[in-house]
Amino acid sequence: MVRTLRVNVIGTYNVLEAAKMLPQLERLVEFSTSEVFGMHAYKVDEARWTYAVSKLVGEHSCHAYCYAFDLPTVSLRPFNIYGPGQVGGGAIKAFVQKAIKNENLTVHGDGSQIRAWCYVDDLVEITFFEKKGRFYLCVSRSSPQYV
Image (cartoon, rainbow, N blue to C red):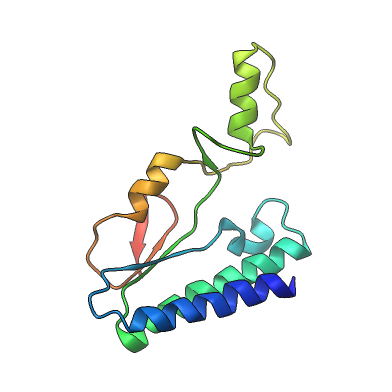
């Protein structure tokens, strides 16, 4: 947990300090996490919470550097990325694999829960989006918000 804090907090600070020295910097993109929503995120235990807090510090650091040094920053909170080449698990991957085999799809809970999904190409597109402004907090392609 300490390593996670050190890497994310000090690492983000070092990147921001280096970015200040780049006079032609168009935009600094910082990747956060949907886990910053804390208890409202899905299955966040203490180890994951340390990660989430460290990423939230990164968001706030970018915001602070934006206003203190006019550094153009963007924080992205990607949710459940899926697409070709995906490694590991995930509901979309599991659903597709079962559907291909004509197996029943398993939905946990009562089915009323909502999850946000982001196709990998959409994440790439929003990472390089063209918007005027100083600081963006982007939750999904359909709802980028200027802060």
